[in-house]
Length: 499
Image (cartoon, rainbow, N blue to C red; front, side, top):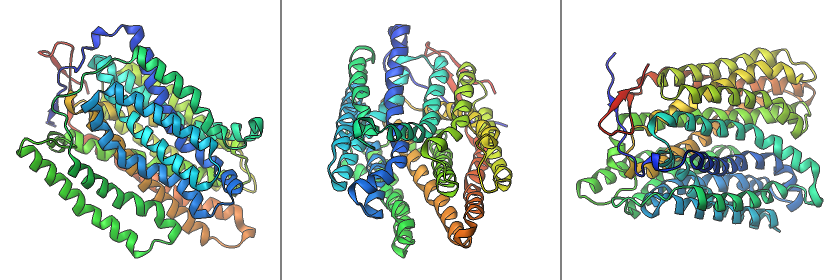
């Protein structure tokens, strides 16, 4: 089959000018920042009951502790990515880490639920500033042939954060350090953030701003409006019983998104700045890639949400016991990430397809595992399925990121990275909404409290139907991605990826 090819432009900063040791220290700093943001999203879920009791908060108020972060983070990713292109990625990264760290301190010191939600908004702004720069700085540190290993590490951090968050949260809350209850889950970010800024000053290279990266305020408003129309009803819909306006907002997001694309093309035709370059919107590999990224990330958050509810609410496990049950997933991610790093740029589409198929198969096998559950859960029964899912996730993430970003030029890498991660958030919010709706609807229809265990089993089996289908679809759609061409350090030499 004949496929189109994508190329990578010359490096914004020659990677060979950065000492090898310094490269890996810089990557460690970027990974720590990425992990700190990712784990913060998952660790909060464990602490919500403690926060609700501490502030005597309503269900709606406590939900906004999570919702405010997701919404603001997604809305700010695109303009923050472009800001990195305009003002220098290291500069924006360090400001983002600083703001995120300050927001974490305000969260830990909050004296009311309203102060906590406001602090979460500050956190989200900082997270949105630092996260797009992490992937965008990789081309300044490593030549194309070595980036597969680096993207594998980012995949590893994403997978580990999804599991480590509930586990670490359970440990910190259970320890009740200095009588602070849930507050250490935020305060622990303060020393980490300070160290990350200091190391970034020393080891992360200063990439010059792109001359062509200007601002597009109307594009920011249109993109933000389209994301808001999708994410807000997804966050609020289930709690409010899915009123008509939720669906009306999601439908309205389509013409606003079309208007955004047309505006970007108009800006490009007039030679004016664009929030998301028209070149990216016309790039088949990039557009399909961000869709597949949203599909991939739509399956994981909802799965771990209902898994925690199944284990804790359904069968009485503590947050720590629940986290320990899911540890095999993180072990699978860890093991496969090392293999993914060694494979580099080889067999990218095959690895995406195989990895997605592994996750779909592993989650489907949980139907059999949970069907055998009686009055108690045996944690090790989940081990083979979750281990296989973790292996699949690490197999798929690295080549997917590599394929998507391989087609992006240095001038647009920050905006492209921001858009990629914005679609991750949209996918995650969509997945949580769908999986949550399936789970809670089945749970409500499953009978009396005397049948609680069976009700949770049936609800869980219904909820994981969406992740199984979404990962199965990803395994098939991965083959529609164009085969990238990875350029070597010599811009005149290019070699096709071996598949």
